[in-house]
Image (cartoon, rainbow, N blue to C red):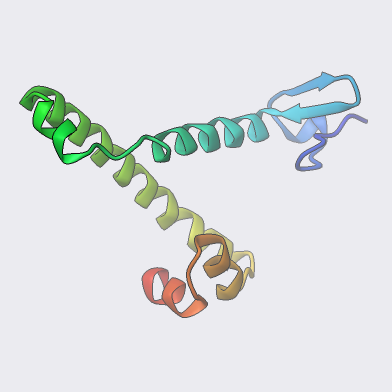
Length: 112
């Protein structure tokens, strides 16, 4: 039976499984990959310098600010759902803190 080379789920457990030479990937792993790339791309946007900001029109700054705010809100909402699910699965605060780049105490204070 075909399984996803990334998460190990079998073809019957996922919506779609793309098969390639010596590798398979499910729709869930593709979705995670796309979100990871989008997040990386958003985070790699250079911070504008003060002179760049001075040259940018009000409408453009308002548009960029709105887009950044939406990204922050979506990320916060996603974290607020993911952390309790990980805790429900028995994942400890140390692992969650490590994944977030903070101590287990900070993770627990923030999400506990």
